[in-house]
Image (cartoon, rainbow over all chains, first blue to last red; front, side, top):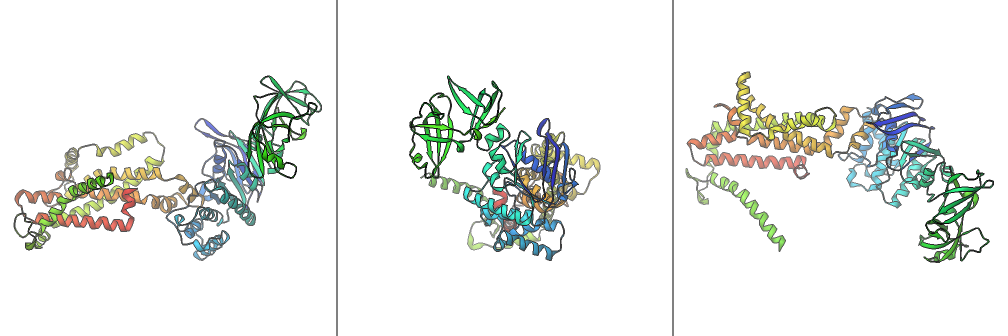
Length: 361
Length: 260
């Protein structure tokens, strides 16, 4: 258990800049996820912490010690790889014992630690099998046990769940979370899956082009994405450019085709300012039927309505600006039950509360 | 219908390839001094002649030892060179690879003459060592090739995982890399042995009257004699090669080795 600090870490591959002056501090026992699209530098960052890549410049410290140039096998870091990388020529127990054997612990101690680790991941019965004789979820747990059995200072996880199906994936997320908590490990998890990041993390660092765009708690990140990129990545699927027409409280007009859409925002804006608006589909307020002229809802025609069980996902075309599609997700409940019946061509009104509209300049 | 045709074709190919071998084995049991296919007269006499013949016996020992030594040396060198080519980054890497594989492209007889000239210049007179060195040169490309192919198929994450678990570079190689590329390495060694064992064009220049190999001994013998002891010697070679392949299959899984 130790805190991890990356200071001004930069990495070049040839002349290509992969990571650009990255700063990140991770507290002892904290679970931090690096979230970003492929090519954002998240896996490279993880490899720098592991020692599998050396940074071109910058400093890495673990538990207060400078680790920037310490070789990978001296770092005492547990890592779970994307393809798991279980050794196919060794049994489950031998795989888990590998890190202990490399550290030349006495045989009795190794056996004891392996047994305990396998017990924690409920695989004691499978210790004599080889990796190809167990299921995907079990392989996952072997990889985990192998990575934490020698009490690493940090546990690194590089998209370890990407090969599993959805249900198993969700089970494993909970299992990983509980295990890491129980062991009190500092953990860095890499994923491109926003939901996975929200489920697992104490904090999420959203990466883009080798930079951290925002690092915050899941709730903060979800409610208040700091940049347009983070907002898009967190599922804010409506992004519109517009011009402020009134100052306090702000009103933004979005010109689309030959029409205008008007949105109230809660923060003051100077008139004439160009901004981008982020509208979360979950925050949309949808009313069925035609919109009265004095109402500030935007009258739309339903283009797509997809029933997803507890939610209806709507694609809406405003009558005033038919070039735009607004995405709305309505959770079905006592007052919204009838929306399950919405179909293409129906008329609805849609709007967003001023305090739920995200404004980016 | 297509399946039947395919089956017929495959059987025909097998018969075409294996029938001559079968004829050799049958002939080795014949009683006369010439080739005889009558089963009632079968005898083991020619095996006795072959085993008692110094020519065949010495040749068999030489071929086996030289083949094994050449395979071992080539495999060792092939691992080192293959690693350098597959993993290190240095100037002229691909030219080095081409150079190491070049013996494959040069006719054996040219290599044989070239080696003979070099060996006599440096004064290497011992035929056993000349054969061994010549065969290492011949078999080395196969070993390098299989090592490079195996390494390029091996995902780096296994070695990375071993390193994060505390393994030194040597421990990573010894405990993870080598066991995982073993089928390929074994295939290279097997090819090396077989190529060394039945090589004629290079061996013929390097052997001498006292030290010869099995194919050379058979050729020498056939120049002056034509009796079934040649067939008996050949049968011994066929049977031992088959046994060798089967043992290897048991030990290392030849199917995996050859089939990938």
